[in-house]
Length: 568
Image 1 (cartoon, rainbow, N blue to C red):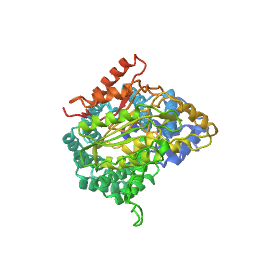
Image 2: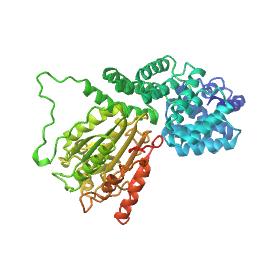
Image 3: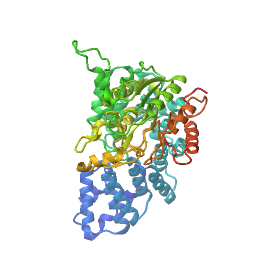
Image 4: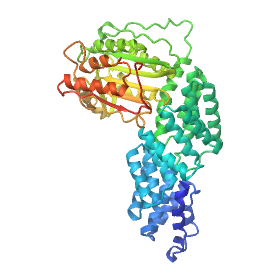
């Protein structure tokens, strides 16, 4: 970014010579337009200059740009976008487009960011910094080939671009080229051994390879460096590097079974103020996993009864859920739940059959399956938490749920069979939050597949809306598109999520023993050599045909490469 700032710095030199501004030029001008000025002082100085109404056009655009730099240092990206938009209106420039594009990137709006970087490149000569930033946005979208091409362009223009080597390595890792990824990240470390970011990314590679001791060592060194010399690049969101270092080391500790150190690192992750989308997603994951490792560390009292799941009250139709056998590194692990015997809302005849059929198909292709039928809230919560804990050491984690589901205020909830919604009750507390499951699984070194046949046509949404009028809660049909992990972050890398029908729509329970979606899924799930997204395409085609276009399954993917559930 600093190279792009140079052009704006040159513009500021003659500004303070204006007679009308002579009194303030020795103080406000340098404070507003010096990169090293603390953000609050920079913003205050720029505010006072704008308030004087002395400058217009290109000079005023420069002031807005520098105030945006101050907001960027504080991580207030909405204000960065507002100021850079005004600067572009007054006088477009590479630097301003680049800064606004970077703010959109930090908010997770990758398409808008790419458009801004494109406009920046059109205005001036090729610039390595802008190519690098556009590569980051392509990587955020999951288009790793275009990301690598932009990093190549940066490295050609700036052969010692540490971060471009690092980020090209990340993109190569996403495509499965671990050797190429390690070579690029090692080169980044050689170019600047004082940077923590390349070490954090090497931590992830060691975890993929199962070398957890090296992962912990690199994570520890990265944390030390981030504390000793916090990144000062204005394009690096505040605290993001330290948060990333803690979460990656915590995941390595947890994979080793060192829950005490993992717990400490998750707590450290949550104690830091997050400003950007990626950091908030890391904290969402840390919150869930902290709860899981804390449970694992809690000793069972000597006089406590043996931990055997007890049958739920007969009227709920709930049954105990078995825990899976412990997962080993590289294991394919699945959680399968079918809820249909609802006590207080419309019962569904097929989810139990659907869950058994899908569980059988998954076992046939080598998955370790934890299966639960007609679970009440306590049993559903337990089996989910057991699964999330074991997933820390799995290569592929798959969740399948059939039954009632609902969106409340744009968040999705899965419904236990004992749910009873009453006016004034804490409704969402009686359900299982899908965002919690997604956040608990969010980890780029594992493939996560979540499949929900939970959009059945039922009166649940109307009940939620009626029960929640006093608290302003809205209920809607079907499920909401999962654009976040509960903290403003986009769908986690390495994750595929599929619904039985489009977001906001309802799915059929079916007239036979299975729903149309689950029947098609169980038939195609075990097809050898069929990539998972191709498998879902076949399922979609079959459902559309069998329902005569009444139901169209939906999926969204941030998978890092091709994934085969059944061996080729």
